[in-house]
Image (tube, rainbow, N blue to C red; front, side, top):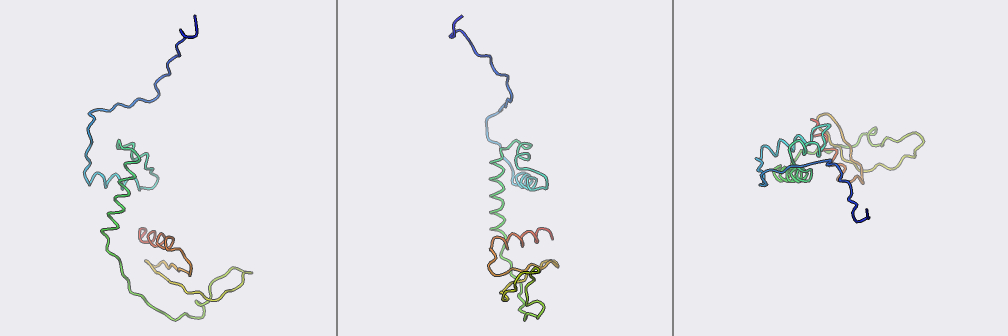
Length: 140
């Protein structure tokens, strides 16, 4: 028996996918919204939700991105009344840890949402402030 007569042993099938029909599935807006909402549930992963519904994770990520874009376009900007107060002596000094030097008072913005106060100091990144405010709104 020569080397050319040798045939490799076939490997066992590990995963087999059967595609039936071959045509595109149509999802209603309500079905897409329900699947997207399910993907945001605590303890869920996008991959697991996509697998349960016969989607690819990529498709579900696309639906999530489109839903975020629509929501942002549909929500009008929110305006709130601003109250300007003179700083009281106890509030004019920022809290510092023991042993840390005190610095000059910096400008800040204070936002209260459902009893939770967020103080935004000078130099805070806008993306961070936005994320904190969105998290507070979502939890209320």
